[in-house]
Image (cartoon, rainbow, N blue to C red; front, side):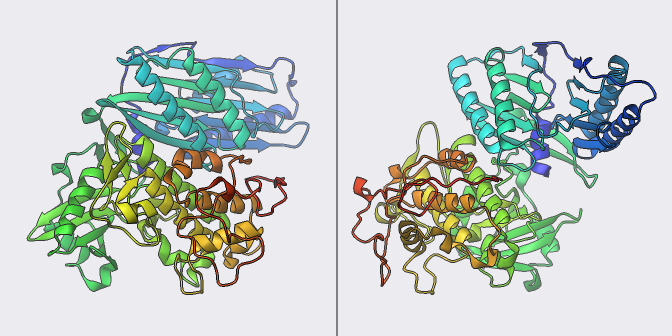
Length: 601
């Protein structure tokens, strides 16, 4: 769990008055399956339970098994994501004690407590979802605007439910803005559950929530296999104190601009006076340096051009926007400095740098196997979905590209560089500008031609990025490609889409995932903004194993290759119904046969 996720979850530990919708504890002993004193099973069970107690607090989740059939004992325990390690340890110890007392001779039993759950059996149940027993807690305070609150909350919860099945940890969180307040929510499934089990479990507890707590300003719905929690706080009053893995105490809050100020002296010391050996790279607005603060924390310092008025505007934009954004797939702004004509932005340091430095490097690209590339695509989608829909205000990035995707130590992507971002309020979804700024090759046609930008112009940029990640090629590269979307669509039309895949990946990859990403990339690069899917639709497509969406039409800025293959794109026009190839969703053939994979992720 990263520090941002920990901060979010600790926000949920604020003290509120709750009413319980059910009994606090639920214990079930399967009396139909008993063991006898002196048999091998209780010995294996004791070893299993001891292992769970010893390991549960390390990550909040543990499984264990001892013995051989028919005397094998399987055990699983899971703590709520928002409880501390100490609370987790105490809860698991309590659960084991209660089960030994209440279920002294049963081979199968479970207990559901406020802070954790525990189950054991003589059968392997680790991938089986169980939401039949639930505990509900409702905040006694009712929402002041019930209809609006229910609408915003349900949209947030459903988006999280779609995202969590793509998460290896089976834990996601986000927030949604409503009036002067923010709704924070998280959903969690047992990590060993498969996609269908997690999805079904969440469906059950969401239904349960809607019958009792959805008009309250907070609730927790707990089951053996999945949890849901949301709370509402005034934006100005959130203050969390958390302890990092390194043992340092940090105060986390929604911070004012003044609290983000960092002195020039500290930043000069951290970067050795902006030494060349500390320079990480150079961009359009200035250079970026690595630094180390006196407490040992590594930082990245963007030094904007001292003579650029545009650089000052970029700094103001990033401070006003990024300081309020809290998401695991967005780079975190730590502070800024305006002293002695310096304009400095301070970010968390991400050791793997920007995506382009790996993706387009002839050696480093080998480290990007397909699974890692797919996770990067999913992470970018989550970050954009937060910007477009789930953050306090709708934000259009306007400069999404490979060099603005940074990678942490585990190669998780974080969207960076918000200097060109535009902020919308209320129901506004689009705007116009007389100053078109961004990166050619990534900019949507309506933005280049008319200065019109919207969430769909970000979707267009995302499509180019997806195609680059799949192919390992730059848009407008020098290898005789007219442009990447034209090359990709021609292969799709000819039924040879898999030939687009970067050859450094080899032949070990899920065919349906690659085809799905190519299709999504081509759908997002359509000429008309209305023809491109939203990021919420993209996340649904990524989380589904069957897509019924129509095949993409010819993309914007289509440039035919010198030699077009028979049956290819020639002769089609953007946006017309005749443009739709008669193909199924996830294939490049023209025989309308659906592709199915026997072993999905």
